[in-house]
Length: 174
Figure: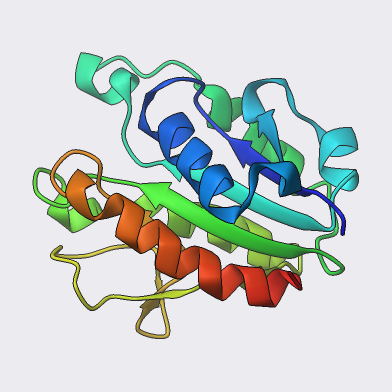
């Protein structure tokens, strides 16, 4: 079986931590970690199966000064890739309490870009069991990927990952 490229950012923090949990649940021998900070089209072209991990808010938001983060630099690269032959799964980090009206919004922003590049996005999740006000990551009444709240619902993360992995394993052909 081909390896799955798990593209994530930033390095360190919750997105990285959840990516490692996903790899462990999936089987680490099937996953190659690729920080988006150092990735480009060459890295994306290596994989037919991709998992993207993105957070909605980060330190730049808390500080009130926005500097280009890893995803700001990497995201334009996505429009240079034809994803029509790739299967893509997404997970997004967000805070469902403090930012309930923006819960995992960047997962939705990422999905828009990927769908415009003909990506076959797998691993949608029901909104059931989540408390939030609004999200750009809702497509046809489901989350476009796996939403994770490590701030207020970290006790649910492992269970949510396990259920999601069972779903995407089948869709990835494992």
